[in-house]
Image 1: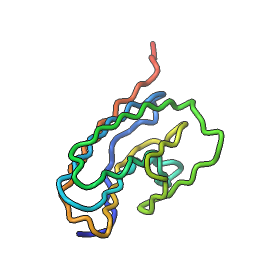
Image 2: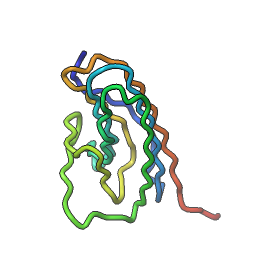
Image 3: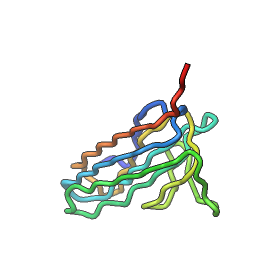
Image 4: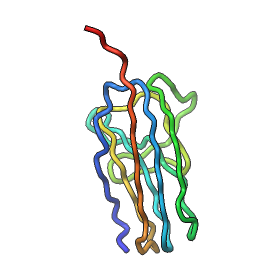
Length: 130
């Protein structure tokens, strides 16, 4: 299979104060697939979530991430940008995000396909009364 990363836009989230992100990753065949969520910050796609790598034969794994725009990390976290993600597996970067999110999937050298990835993002925006 191809080891080139692929990406797809998830949606506009800049007005949200909280995000709930649900992911289902189903693996039918061999190989590894790295699944990331990136945020567009000042024109640069930056790693935000890196799901755990799914072992061969696991079937469907489900994950839930709850994020607050006001949270922070007391220590630096290594991230990647663009189609060169570098966030360690099973890691979430806390804190504010940019305007748009996208899903990036990077197959391993021995990945031959057979993955289904479904991601749902629900954002909570502050109440605005006229």
